[in-house]
Image 1 (cartoon, rainbow, N blue to C red):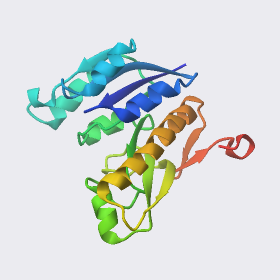
Image 2: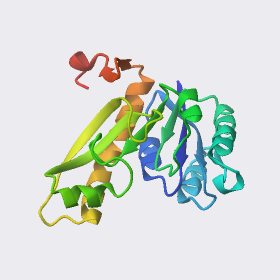
Image 3: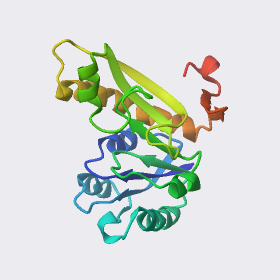
Image 4: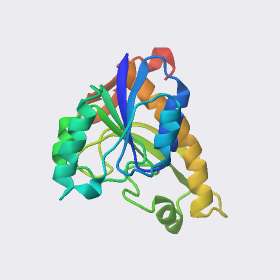
Length: 204
């Protein structure tokens, strides 16, 4: 069984997708938020998942917050830490502590459109395809070995909101699948790239 801790800042829709997927190899050990009003906390608690809050505003800086966050996470003994709309830039020390077992989902086809306002920027550039990316987290923001991507066509009449909604549907499909592959120990990082072991014979 793979213990995972999920970090959220809001409603945690990707957290909900992972929980609802009921992956046999996965146990959600805790959901942690940096905001007490994160709606996802109540959703998780209602399903019997332990929750915790660590308010980043109570700390003098990012290093102090990340050190306390790591201590809280480690109490749940996770095999994998999952960022699901966790709106904090993590320090290199935190990222390195969980190297190879810290993943994130980003609403673009990385390496394009890192950072915020991805859909507005994609539409402004006139791209024909958008999407989302699940990747291992490294110290460089929205970089790191790519686990999986999903592609969404961009319509001529798309707005940032309509595009975001279609991308989110793919996020909810892609993220649980990536977590499942990690739990099955099928993700192998080689020379900065992710190989899915057994992909050919299992159709992954």
